[in-house]
Image (cartoon, rainbow, N blue to C red; front, side, top):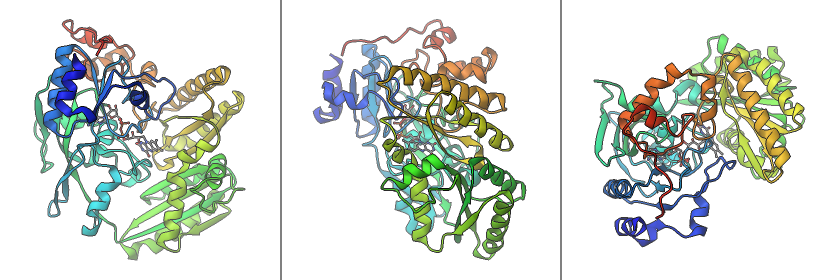
Length: 475
Ligand SMILES: Cc1cc2nc3c(=O)[nH]c(=O)nc-3n(C[C@H](O)[C@H](O)[C@H](O)COP(=O)(O)OP(=O)(O)OC[C@H]3O[C@@H](n4cnc5c(N)ncnc54)[C@H](O)[C@@H]3O)c2cc1C
């Protein structure tokens, strides 16, 4: 029996097969479409990952890498009763190289823990998803995660130099170069953002960033979300490059202020815009004044500057706690993720809000406005079938509005199982074909994380006639 073999590899306590244990793994941050795995293993080292992969293959059972399970597109959910390989015990920071500003990390390292481990050296890890207190670097790599500071510092792909990957056949390969000097195909680039479909990352060399000399954070208060978006456009147009430009709308403000993340945000504001500037201290005063002026011209009724680090952290606690705070509004939350050209933000936001109203839904917006990366959040109760249907219909309309505006269907949360049926909105068959072939080159029989990214689970068979479908196999 596979379960016995898995126990022999990872130990009894690191192999979960009881119903109440598996329940925890039946979804990630996307609760809409739960699916229970056949087993969950928590390997403690790369060799255990390799042994688990080989055992699954022999048994004909699929497997799914998983980090902290905070993904919002169903990427870490086993869709066919396969084995979840949770990487949280591979959590060592193996080396820090200050001269080259790099770190070698295992995939289970929590995002914020890396920054905490190197901040005494004047360094930090720049990609900062709002989930950074819990999400892992393995999950960040697989999703090419962004965060509030992506605007200036880029997404995960801009910070990964090399990877150790366990291929779906159990072979271990080293991709990229710890020096960051490119040679051959950019396979690191291919794996970053591949949503756990090309193999299991067991180590990564990542770039560390010098902490800025100075940081200034402003809170601009607007009568409505549309004028806050206009301010975003004019700030970028002016040539300024803030580290972050984040919009929080009125419904989100109310949820945050009623929660443990309360930051004293004005409840009567239509929206607030958080603007963070970083760089040499001597340059920031002029930039702060410029932002004040531009925000005022766009309609800001007030612009506050954080006077100390505690106040700055208060603004960020409100922003980063926003999704959690929405738990107060309804039992379920559907976090959408789409990107539109920044200049189209005001009009798209208006249309998104009117879709929410038309379907009678509680829709709240908190998003990476500088990147044009929208997060319309729909609060609902999935036990209410009628409401659930309205949520799904509104979600599809929102995606179509974003695509019609020249946008794409995901900015940072991935396609997963959530959006695979919508990938045709942005890619035709001819565009998808090379992607399917790439996946088939790494994962020829589709055993690693099946049912994700592409519209049909049979895509591997299409790309490789020798492939077989991995069905639910009793463990
Ligand atoms: C409150 C909240 C706020 C969020 N804010 C942001 C944000 O600002 N920006 C953003 O980009 N995302 C955000 N997210 C989404 C999520 O946190 C990110 O996608 C994150 O990178 C997922 O990491 P994880 O460790 O939870 O991965 P999981 O959810 O466990 O897995 C995500 C994907 O990674 C794959 N994977 C995991 N580990 C490995 C591995 N070792 N090798 C190969 N594949 C692997 C899985 O198969 C899955 O496809 C947020 C989520 C929540 C709940």
